[in-house]
Length: 303
Image (cartoon, rainbow, N blue to C red):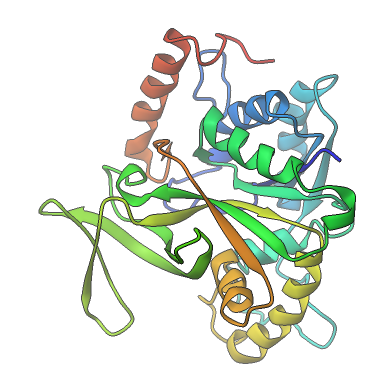
């Protein structure tokens, strides 16, 4: 059973200043998503599912989906503020999306196989997609609902932006390489040569360069949708009136791991992440893509 690639493309892009998912950064107008899809095709994935906002569906279909015809099957699902469990109503003052794990929940009706989750606006590289593709492909049909998940753990020093702080899921693992905790930290940056963030108690925490972090490269089996729906109800009971609360993937994963409902194998990579968190990041991404083309990692034109 070939795994599916689930691409989170519904973000508002508030820090970037626009719909960065549609920004052409390659030499022929390729988006970062195009490179991820190209890597997924050569990495053995069987289909791609995108979660987007309904309000830019037309642009997305015209500029993105049309390129993949005859290359790989694609499907689209939609994230919206009012897609909540029965008994819950979105507060009228809420404008912020419910978060990455809410976006993942939108795929339940179309994803029935092991699947990888990635962000649309992060450039992960060929190795990262291949690593998680191989891991998911090893899960046969009989084992696809065993709550045995995986993630690619990037080294935090390879994931920073030169333009400002970043959000990362900071991970701890056991001696066998399985995740023990993951906590979303929303303001990690290098200050005076040290990678650090401020925790919930106002204390400065310094991270080692090789601390594994989540870049939202997760591998799940379909049972993850059921877990997510149940825990989302608990999340809403506590947070529905907080306009800034978000239901992050690491929040859900940490719940499952700490309560021993699931295991998550951490797959190491030395890959260097890059992306367009801020407008000032754009030219650096363009230059790095051109360098990868020059060394033969990607063709000049993808599709």
